[in-house]
Amino acid sequence: MTRTGYGESNGKIILVGEHAVTFGQPAIAMPFSSGKVTVTIEEMPELAVSTMISDVFEGEIADAPEHLHALISRFEEENHIESPVMIKIDAQLPPSRGLGSSAAVAVAFTRAAFDFMDQPLSDETLIEHVNWAEMIAHGKPSGIDAQTIVSNKPTWFQEGVFTPLKTLNVAGYMVVLDTGIKGNTKEAVSDVHELVKNNQENMAFIERIGRLVHKANQAINTHNFESLAEIFNECQTYLSTLTVSHPKIDRLLQVAKQAGAVAGKLTGSGRGGSVITLVKDYATAKKVAQAVKEAGAQHTWIENLGG
Picture 1 (cartoon, rainbow, N blue to C red):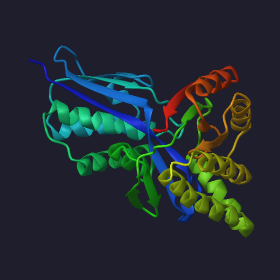
Picture 2: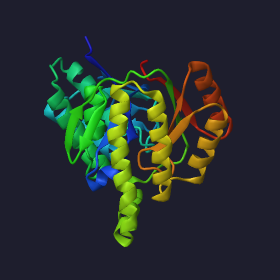
Picture 3: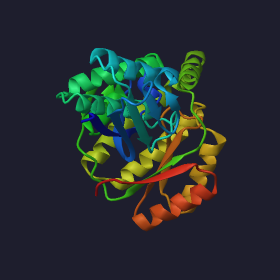
């Protein structure tokens, strides 16, 4: 009987605190359940070599993107897999959009690999494997993606320390939109640090974002949609001042608000990537999703905020 393994995961969203977190301020990330990733691994002795099928790559494992190649090679070497395998990755998460795509794929793959080997998998081992793959993908990951995706809980992150938060339970919806523009985290982070270094007045915006993160935590604890909406709009103003917005982000936010969204901000490093908007009910969420698609958003997802 041929062996098979299956694993799944979802993405993550930075709710508030991006960029400020690189100055020691806190940030809050939450699981992104609409951004599903599934991985299947199947033993296929009839194949000449191990092969992968996914949205971003199709072909021999040897030619796969570096972090995927490394992850799969580690699995084959550590478990002495000699028979070729077929790996199928189905990701509802576009890469380089600030939604945790590479970490989500690594989580789903690692779960599938341990399932394939019929071995138990602790969260600690899973996070170690994912952060190892993330280091290859991004150089020096913060670990927030792995932590949030594996725990599947909102997470408070500050200076390398992760604290799980209450599950979001706010009456309302979040419409997540993909601008279609790949973000460049390294460049955006470096530019913001340069801005602050050259003009200390910009540090005030970083500190204000930090204060908004504390307010957002209070809003989550008190199920306060209106407060969260105010925080989103204020935070976007500061991120824009710090040069990490983008004309397309601004345009999509404008369209979303005209269609009924009460608030919105970029999520992640900005200058493209993804945008998160808040709406009060599902009917409005559908309207907003349709309007931003017509205005050029590549993908949209509607996330229930739990209330």
